[in-house]
Length: 359
Image 1 (cartoon, rainbow, N blue to C red):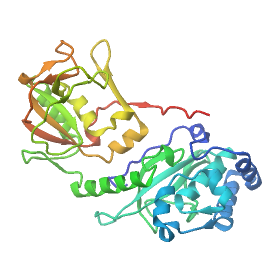
Image 2 (image 1 turned 120 degrees about the horizontal axis):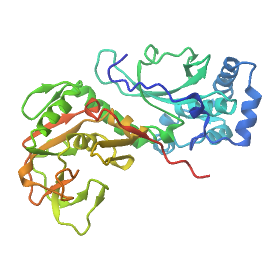
Image 3 (image 1 turned 90 degrees about the vertical axis):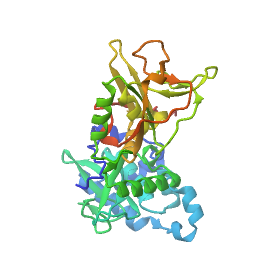
């Protein structure tokens, strides 16, 4: 398996019988699924693939009208695709495929893949396919290509690394053209780093060793930590204070530099999307963390930076030495900068369920 792969076993099969934003069932979709249903799951899958590949027209909108293609990229629902009888690429095909299968009672996932360079360099492009639950196991199916028996690591137009697995693109890392561009840029950066990280002191470290170093600094009680996705900040400027326990800005509070005495909090904030994450502590003071699947998928692509600061310049925001947030009322120059990646995140992160779609 490629070391960059974000490979995860899908949740329970029943989780992938639900509707997503782009895979909502309509009467037309139910009727078409019933029309294509075979005597076995395998026969149904083959008939759906045959319908899509031979009855649905493919239009290469990416070449014909690139700007329009960017606007509609991963935004068309299964109903819209069926009504138009036209697909614009593998994403449209897979959206329609998983919707028809789920209507027939066959669990199916939407898989996002990033094309790899077998020689270890950067290679642009990606692909969408599915994994279906059949014969008590998840099996890969490429409805826009080879069909059943697909292997993303051996594909002739690949190989691919799995980036995310979801109900449909609206719940994936690449839910728009702009998001896909971000992933490509992050991938370039990750390839360039080769998963080997270099701190400001010149020491080279493997993934996971950044956390070890930061924990050693934490127990010395001499430092606090500020996490950021921005590299090489030479001086942290004063800004509106943020209450780390609630994530809210203190509008009436003084301008300050905010940090935490807990390295894990800084690592978490450096790598995870704060809009889809949470952290706190229990009555005994143990830290706990939560993140959505999308936030974790993005964290696996990110490189973050933890700025180590002199503790003597900071005071606890809650008055207690155990407060998660501390602040200084003057700008701060970091003692050192430690780069962190996904393997440096806290060992236990609770998976936050996305909010259900309103009907």
